[in-house]
Image 1: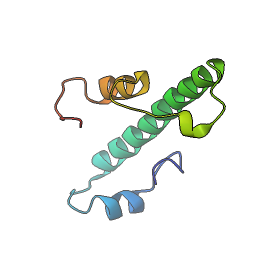
Image 2: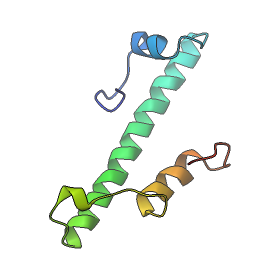
Image 3: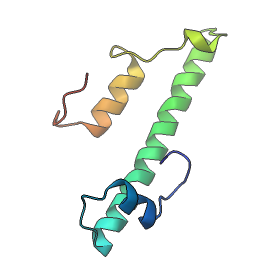
Image 4: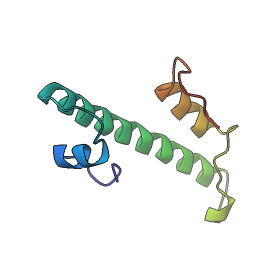
Length: 88
């Protein structure tokens, strides 16, 4: 859902994260974080797609993202720098 809007509204955030006690600061930080995540994600996806086209991939079913892919590595390194989360 965060991929369809540039800045998620506070109502959307409160609906999705009902366990968070929202303040003005927390709300603005979450909005900023999701906006940055969306932008970085789409930039990485565009790079991946352009690379696939250059390699001659014609069928969308030939595109997969596994743990060994550069896209997976880039997203994991960007958002899990300290390896706080175990990614499966």
